[in-house]
Length: 324
Image (cartoon, rainbow, N blue to C red):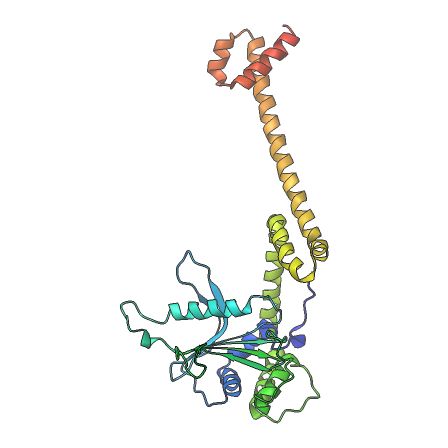
């Protein structure tokens, strides 16, 4: 089972600390200004884990940190420690979920759609080009200087990037700090990065936040334990996913305890059901047999017990085997 890190051991690549930090408007504003290289004034307070859903029947997503500025530009920012293999399409889904909620019913002018930035920060190079920053907006394949200008931008930041010539020194410092949040010996030139750093220290030393972190961990642990009941199917699904990356044998080895526990519980439930079923069957046969032995006719007993043919057959066979 995954070992729980203390709050002071977390970095900004960990979702809990990232969300706690970026819910503070000054931190979110500083982060966006460093990434985008321009001044930003927030219109609303940042919201962490904002739920987006088109309908009650559709899949919902929880956006890590969501905020809107005074120019009505919307930003969704998240840190993603693990490469799940689906981040490009996931960012597309996030984009569509945000767009689906932007127009009020009855508005048919799509020019009313807000500009939207989806920003994902990772400690790995998703596109294998050694860049620190990959920015995507729609352009024409046939004419490279023709832009769609649909207001949608997706940015992937790589804290392990080597080619930093296209980013500012301030963004380079920010990317280092996001991954090495607890490096006490590092000196930063950026006032904005130092401001976020000071805020992180305050959060990590806050007992109320620490309690909330521990409660969240316990809830996740509880859900994992409850999930053992469905572990057989989920374990196999997870095994298939992980097997693509680590090898099926290694993944099955990791998941085997979960699968074994789920199968054991299923066997226990099945055995208990069979036991109860057998006891009920035996009791019904014995009741039918006892009535026959008491002198009641077979037709009379049938009318009393409303027994099925299997019960009647079994009772009669036992009666013939041990005549009264």
